[in-house]
Image (cartoon, rainbow over all chains, first blue to last red; front, side, top):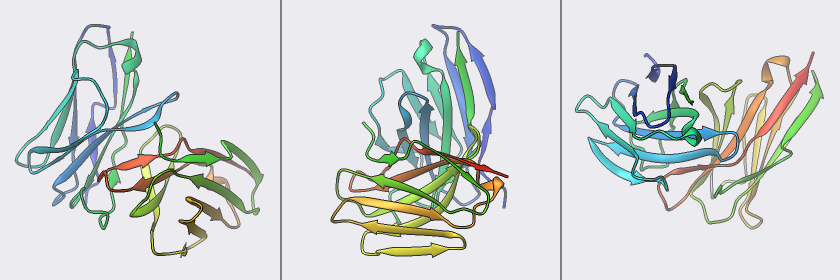
Length: 115
Length: 110
């Protein structure tokens, strides 16, 4: 079974631009969660999608948004990029992210650099 | 803010030695999980321990959980150079999401 894939793996953008990151979950997994990892703040939960609906959200500004498609693939979008958005963005999939019975499988991440 | 605080922040040991990492958290949990991350890459799930369990083993890993002290420890026995990585604890509570600690960076010298 293929693992979680994320594209692109690396991205360089300029302040003020917007960016879209993509995540393909493991086949059969319906929940996709997104996390931001920075040296200063560590790993922080962005949001979780299940069956095309945002089910849970972290404490991030509205510039961070996401969506999930009918095949469970998910995208996250960051508009009006700021230098502080430079981070490793990780997505994780599980059978049902709302249940603690199911393990989350992480992708390799997208390294975003904002200049 | 992070739910979990890990101690130590960095640990350097020789191959063959045991490595112990500790994690403390603030609120009630359903379970606590440990993850490994190699050099800024994705996270690998190591072990999950539920709030009604006190100890769990998986290969060379041993995890303990003390809910009265809101703390957990991860022991890696007979460490190998390949164990060099960052280790994170993450708690799953009533918020329905994983909340991660800051992590412990482990270096195992051959």
